[in-house]
Amino acid sequence: MSDDKTPAPTVWPTLRATDARALISFLVDAFGFAEVAAFGDGTLIHHAEVAWPEGGGIMLGSHRDDDWNLRPGTFGCYVVTADPDAVHARALAAGAEIVRGPYTTDYGSREFAARDPEGNLYSFGTYRGEPRPV
Image (cartoon, rainbow, N blue to C red):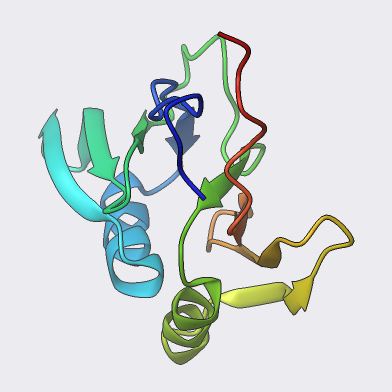
């Protein structure tokens, strides 16, 4: 549910990938993200963005030996969607590892969870967060 107190997404989660190009393709095919940008040379992706159709997105890049911050496969995020069952069906059809099938939480959110080929965890659900005080 959206109202004037619930803000639009403004946080960009980030991750590193062993094979960033393959991960981008997976996120597009299995979950429905849209590739917005990918900058790099050859197989090394310095910066990429995938957008979630309902708002927000993820920034990612190739893991490098000199990387000091993130390791591939250690990322997790919650993605708000109006239709998690449709995203689940798409992910299942694309061969995503479903770690928790669709269920309804005790606070009314419809959700499921899946891993990408790098081991990152994505939870998809209808919960948009609590309204912010004005």
